[in-house]
Length: 282
Image (cartoon, rainbow, N blue to C red; front, side, top):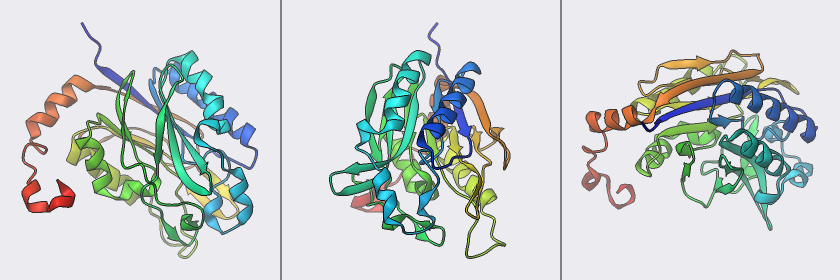
């Protein structure tokens, strides 16, 4: 009998300016997740260093690399192959004079399947990403990995339901979002942790598939990242999670064959009225 299960793992950690130390943190957490059965393991966004987009400082451009030469990618490729796991690796990418917030998908043999560049780029207090990154030019992607068809958006992408739906229409079976989100410097009373989750739980419901998000923790020069990384099932129910401060992993297992039948039974894709949406939504 064919095993149609997929086991997701999300990593949560704190990161500083030492890229080597950050990579070692992620490698240790990947091993922990794999030891708990995880087959697709998601680190947080831009774990190569601190979340530098809190301000506009040109020195950070020196920490970008070509996608397939990025130290985070080359360090995790052998580990993915050793453990037989899929790892979406979030990086600061340089492509000639162009810079992107990107993700390189590593398959379970360590091979890089390609790159996705973040489509939606935020710009606001504490999250000044438009200074550093161009809007992505890859379009949304779904990766046919050894363990299943995986769609990955990056942080700000998670707030846009069309990102999730586009990946679902491309055949995704699970949706993943590496993230760096926390306090809002312009408003100490604003805590977005709950709505951050709810937005993605809604994507799970509307697309009838599991959704997982990996965030960072810790205080980085006054900006406090609130963790709460989680995995929810196709109903939006949170089935595995981490708290606001801990470093660790969350793992959950799903049956892809069941989910495929369940998506068909709900009819969300059967009943789409593309004739009413206009040419850009077909």
